[in-house]
Amino acid sequence: MNPRLYVIKARNVKEYNARRSLRFAILDCDKIGVFPSNFICILPQRITVTANDESVFARIFGENRVEVARRLLTSALESEKNSEIKTEIRQRLRTLDCTDSNQREK
Image 1 (tube, rainbow, N blue to C red):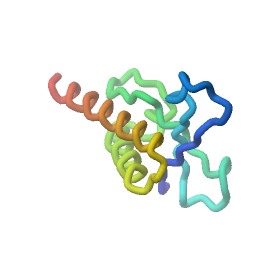
Image 2 (image 1 turned 180 degrees about the vertical axis):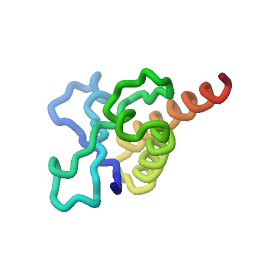
Image 3 (image 1 turned 30 degrees about the vertical axis):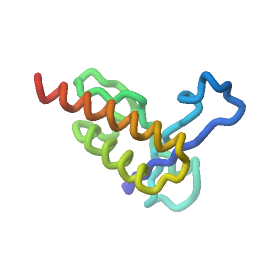
C-alpha cells in the first residue's frame, strides 16, 4: 500500500462552515485506477492514540496511525498550493503534535 493524502474541497458551503468543507481522503497510489477504486479511508480531524479508537483510519494503520498521519500531512503541506488547505493542514499537524506530546507525558 502506498497511501497519499488527497484534499477535496466541497462546493456550495457557507463561509462560516469553511473548515468542514475540506475532506482529507487517503488514496492508495499502488492501485490502478482512479477514485473511488483506490480509496482507503478519510483522515479523521482528530487522531487519538487510545486503544478504544474505532475509526477506520485507526483500524487500518493501527499503532502507527500518528506517524502515518504526520507523514501524509507533511507531504501534502509541501506540495499543496492552496493557502486555505495549507492552513488546515498546519492546524491538523499542530493538533497531532499536541496529541502525541500528551501521550508521551502519560
